[in-house]
Length: 261
Image 1 (cartoon, rainbow, N blue to C red):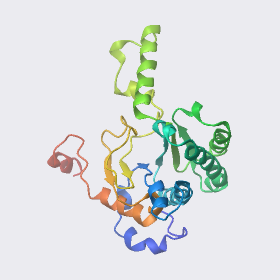
Image 2: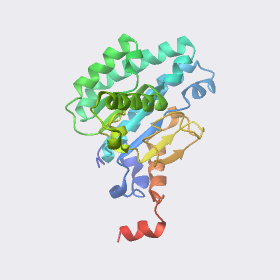
Image 3: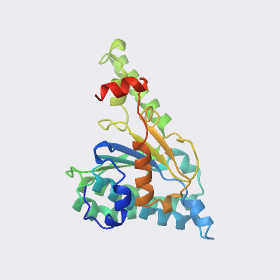
Image 4: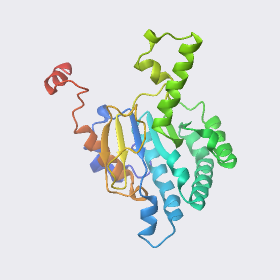
């Protein structure tokens, strides 16, 4: 853990409550509440999206400093295309510009950017900036920061099922060989571990078509904090709460305890 990173000393009381040997390997987040944050201040919804970029930076910095391996952010769902066109345009421009501006720091901090979702729907300008960052950080070996863009968990599973059915029809895969691992290899998140912890800000308590397969055994953490207010302290509270859970994966508590002896 990098205690010398900016702002880490102020977080020492919370860091002292954190067991660094039991951190989640993969944290997923649903970044909700940007629009409501802005409206509560009499601002246009787009102002909340701009403010929310700061929270993305903070979550990325803390994940990297703590040594968490994977951070996956729900940046834009397929359903979000149905929002007012002006808001969609602002979001697409903001996502592209923010990643372009952050690219030098991502490289400096050894953070690898990964993009998942139906990326062919992305506007060319935003896609070019995002892809340039993905290429620039391809050799980074620290935190993997994944942005789920134009993403739908149901569509991801449908696509995976279609690819597996095609392989069976072509004879390159037999029905008897289909397993959970087979399906996982056809998901956008291929090669990534499932999320240990899924955090949703903004007060809603649902996962909204996000990582439906991958989150089967994730610990869920819901907070009323709106995304622009989700700072490093709020993130640490989520991690501390996570460490208070007993992850049983279908086993009894006694079985879990005996396996740790």
